[in-house]
Amino acid sequence: MEAKESLERDWSSLLPELLNLIVRNLTEISDFVRFRAVCMAWRSSTTITDLLPQFPWILECHHFLKDDLRFYSIHFGKTYSIHAAKSLGKWLIGLSNNYINIFDITRQVLSLLNLLKDHEIPIPAYDCDKYPYWKGPWQNQMGVQMLCYGPAGCRNPKLVFYHLDQNNWSELIIGSDYVNCDITNCNLFYLDGMLFIVLRDTGVTKVMDVSTNTLAYIIPPVEGYSTKGTEYIMAASGDILRVFQYCDPSADLRQYCFIIHRLHINESGSVCWVEVDNIGNHALFIDMNGGFVLRACDFAGIKRNCIYNLTKMRMGIWEAASCSVERIDIETGAREQFPYPLKKPRGWFVPVL
Image (cartoon, rainbow, N blue to C red; front, side):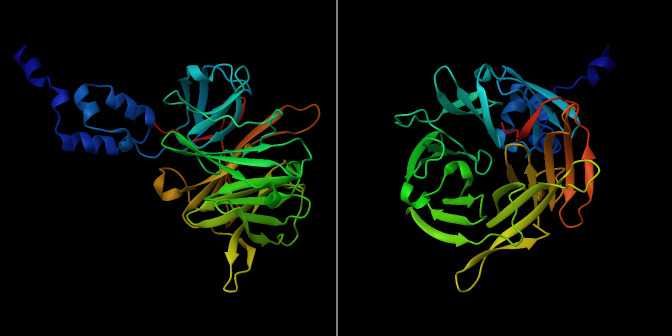
């Protein structure tokens, strides 16, 4: 009996130095949550910010959300289930890093939802006579909601930006005179106070400074511009990247290829897109909704100068849709496939407590 009692330990009294050492080795969010749930002493020894940045998960869902959502981590090869009561019955509009953008059809309300906290942030309603037509790059910048008001084909839409800062929204309305384009025939991207309007038919990009409602640049199309693909514009540590995704028709299996350009401003002030095969210490995450950029050095398991591409496409009229998760080396073009056990992938999601 004495020998058994001598082996017992009061784990709640571990030195703070040891607890900090343990936390630094908890790379998975579930282990971090379990650590903080052991006792009050362990919980008080850490804060939410001690959690290491997590490799993005893949969200599986239909357009209409349930209250139990499933995710898959290709880094750990694990499936997670999260209960979020506020997601039940909502319509999924898109993903925005660690939030999802949802629409409540009954109340006609758009909002951002943090799934891990089950915390919903409603987006202010805008006074509009007609039911709004909206589109938005939910993943290009977290906390920015862009709405386009106007019927299809309208050349003078009302663009309203809502900026989220500590759960408070500020509203910015863009003058329609500066847009002057069919919103159904262009791609809109908002990055750090600049609105990029890409005209699909010509490939010309108009860049507006939204704080002054002035046209800053007109960027000519890239050489060999094609409309047979999808274009994304993303920010990467001060650089602006144009990512063009297209389907390789010569491949035996339908696979996506990418061409990347960086925005270059020369000494005379003129701007152009310059093709690059190296984006430094960054990685691109692309899915059916859009894409975003992460610094590889900030996340365990992310390889630099790569594209993590999540695709879902129909191979033929009578064939079922296929899902592919792959990592593509931008410089060499080498591809690595990852297994994906779930059936309905929707997009990349960055888990943040």
